[in-house]
Amino acid sequence: MSGPDRKRSAPVETRGEGLEEVSGKGARALIASADERAAEGLSRLLRALGWTPIVAECDDAALRAVERSQPTVVIARFEKQELTLAERLRSLYPLMPVVAVLPKPNFDQAAMAYEAGATVCIGDPVTEPALRGALRRAERRLRQVAAERVESLRLVDSARALNASLLFSDIYPLTLDTMMRETGSNAAVGIFADAERGVLGLRAMRGMSAEMAEHLAHRLTPMLEGRLSSNARPIDDTIDPDLWTSLSDVLKGEIDEPPRLLLVPVPRASRGREASTSPNIGAVLLLRHAPAAPFSQDLRERAAFLAVQAGIAVQNGALYAAAEERAYLDPLTGLYNTRYLYATLEQEITRSTRYGHELSVLFLDLDHFKLVNDRHNHLVGSAVLVETAHLIERKIRQVDGAVRYGGDEFVIILIETTHAGALNVAERIRESVGEHVFQEAAGLSIRVTCSIGVASLPVHGKQARELIEAADLAMYRAKSQRNLVRSASD
Image 1: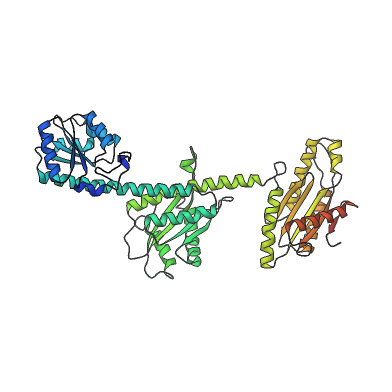
Image 2: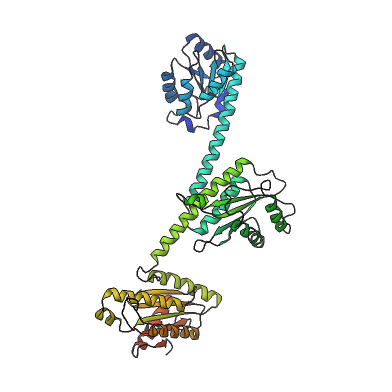
């Protein structure tokens, strides 16, 4: 705090708790004046108002005194119209109020002082009422600057929280929460592009029913893909009345009076020349319940700032998801690896058990694959494995999962698939592999067959390892004849 008990280590430019000291009560005021008599007069006035004066005779001494004593305000007499001190104070201590005492307080001189960094200007000689008024104006300015700084720091904290999020399940709702808090909104809808396909859709909502959020997203999505796709600034009813007519019609069923609306585009974070042509990655619709004042310019700027941070967070989330995806992929075939297999299969078993769905697992092994490596080489063998992976992917659905288990072994997870259905899929894969001519484009003609075992939930196991082992054992029974599909029930 200010006064004799204040710690000198507290940096001047971050103080906000000493504001009450502008009215005196022992707070320090630094007088920068080369005129000893004038400085003494100012000191008497300050003591009468309850202040503790500190006197410095030159600019360098004043700056040292500010650093050493950390006064609440600086009162600088500019006898020769030298404004260097005000400029240096503004540079080093931007929150420090400076009362400029001007020998000839005309308009030009005051303008120069304010431009140099003065907070308040008063004429010389200084009277007690004039000094009291100047200190009060300095106090108001200091409070205003401190409040602005608190808001800026809060925005920075919100931006940091957004940028620290890497999961889309956290980024989308956090974006809505921070924008609502910073703009005083009561509800919000977040429409973002899907990370994989870029399709816009409802990702998060606050303060409204899911049905209403879906209606708003359905009405907004075509606009965001069309005429609003390149818009970079927040839009309210004064900028685009047609948009609000359309949205107000949707809101009539749930909100009695039309709310204040603000549509905030979320720009796609990109670099270089892409930045000017890349479309938005989505938008957030903010609603303030009536009666409410329109969104001010300051609130629109806050929302726009947070939208940029959200765009960066979404990009970081996409990079994280891609990195995580790579950690689950087999580098040779591009199929999933065993790490993915056990994590996903356990989740699918839990889901299937909860909803009463069936689930099946295929275990595939290429027959006599060692001969391919022996007769050709391991590079050709690797190419055969890649072609096998492509054949498998073409025979299963997008919701299913194909895994390279190791070597020439593959596991396929068939979601919501009966045992009979899984046997049919296995048979189609077996036929596809057996009919395919491998490495034909390289001038070779390699034929390979496969053996496949099939196990299903819950008949052949209720845990991931049980199902995989059951399918593996069925595959080994098929190996006795090769080029065959066997059920775990056989």
